[in-house]
Length: 133
Image 1 (tube, helix red, strand yellow):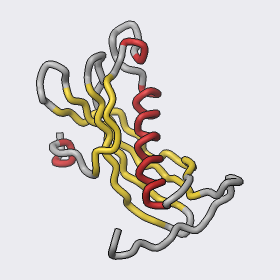
Image 2: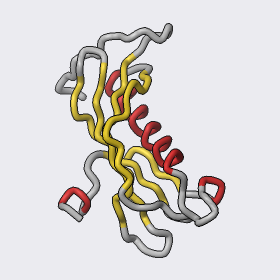
Image 3: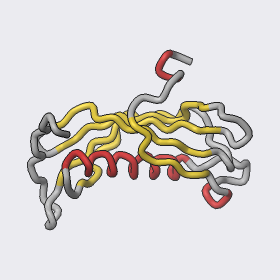
């Protein structure tokens, strides 16, 4: 474990319990379900920053570190790494909180790239941040 595995980085964006329907026969939650929750968190945070619609254009360097078990609460944290003209790059971390304790464990991390889009699905420029934000 390195220092990035001690405390979550970013804002808590999604919290959801891992349910039996999301698991394999061994009780491990499917990686695709975890990735889906991370994508939701990236979309929420990017849409807030873009002040509008966004779509996922890339998922880079997704790393699964530990399994998620049925009954764990999956907590997904997001932080904006870079804002381009039409895209937003986010660091996304997924942590679990065990149901029987308050122990938190980093289970997955990755970089998601979202693009701001208009009502026709075409890329649009992202407004600059102001001090009032």
